[in-house]
Length: 384
Image 1 (tube, rainbow, N blue to C red):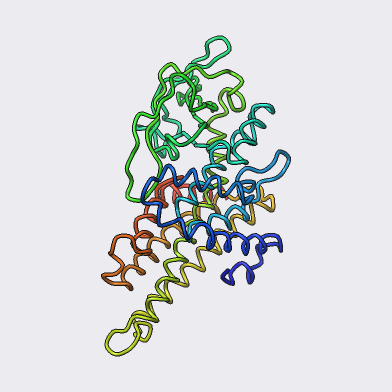
Image 2 (cartoon, helix red, strand yellow):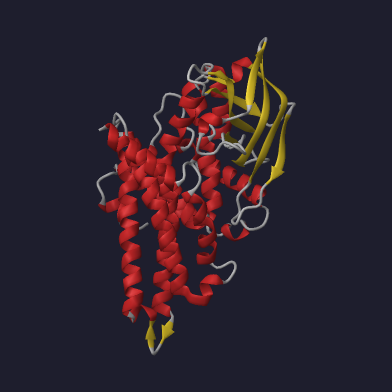
């Protein structure tokens, strides 16, 4: 474990113990499997879910009823998993992202059934919000859910849904009416992958291993009791979920950036050019200094946001957006510099830094693009 967790004031002794435990777990169990991520990503993700459940880490993504969500612990785990495998990190975060709305708003018996299965690794979760014509503008969703007796009939299509085809159940957002201002009234539903009328329309190939695809709903009948919260709660629940998990995307970025820096240090010390190690050249030293400074700044922003959320701050929206914005942008620069330090080796398919170069790019887009984060930050500033 690096010294950051030990030397910064955001953490309890329990967090420090967790950081040590998850770092050892990642080195022992994840690192040896990461090379297989480029093969069958669906199967690899299922394996990671079971591995995380068996070692007790999914309880930090899906807390027991009555237990608060420990965002610092969640970020610590994401950072350490993404250091070794972004697919293992995805397996972890989707269990939380796909169940959080259920945990805060579903009826008790429905909530307990799905959360217990997700926590034990018996069911894989997904979060189905984005559509072909609705990304950053959540309120423009076109998927429709119409009430018929004791069911809701869902019709529509979702796009770029992580865990599509792997998940056993999906938290799905659909419009159930129109508000007075003309915008969509959104509601949230639990949809089992076995539900008639539900299908995975297409699997999408990404630049890095990532189970993702398009979902289709054709007269998919969902019991009314599987609505999460009340009709019209969907927009609030979706934004509440994204607001909580946003800082953790920065934590994943920090894990990738930390791995890129470590790989760069090792290479710079061992690779000789012009009669001395790369680390002896001042331009390489400048790159390493910039990388380390940006990484420290990113981690401080991420764990400040997580600490404020855990401490019960009235709002940490701006801090969470700052953390995601800076950490993901910084990680992109750090990984890019790592490839530069490695030279031609950094371009070889399958090397660690080449893999990181492909994996880090998505972080600046999902769960709110960098551009959206700037709008959120500015909006919060103008409110103050």
